[in-house]
Image (cartoon, rainbow, N blue to C red; front, side, top):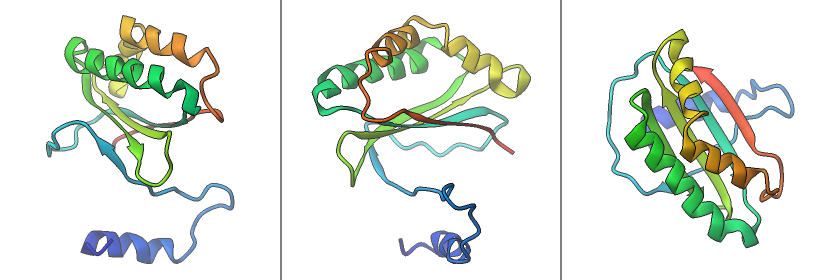
Amino acid sequence: MASPHFAVWQAFVDTKPWVEGHEPVVDFYFGEHEAVKTEAVPAFCLNVDVCVKPENRAEFVPTISNNKAGADNAEPLCLQYVWGESTTSPDSFHFHEEYTGADGGKEGFDFHTKAPHFLAWEKFAATSPFTKEPAVYFFRTI
């Protein structure tokens, strides 16, 4: 990580400002989408980390690909839905989602959770396909 903005981040991290057990994890993943730079807007966001059992990978990938396609194509309040696999830990996946609408974007997220493609994801997630509980982090842009 040689970029100047990452050097500032690293200097901050080196001060060890985190509560023990809540240190951030920096990982990289390959996404299957074009990178597009946009201005930040008020949004309801979430990051999700999942570790899929290797035997469930063949079902996971099309299920999450369908969820992304549905969010991109059928949800006008979805600003961004990206996901990819860790470059250092096979079968570990990271998602980032952003929604707009009323209540600081929560309207868009609530719409997403009622969509058919999300319900298919929920059906998959109910089959215990993970090696550990997914980590879900909600936040709003500031």
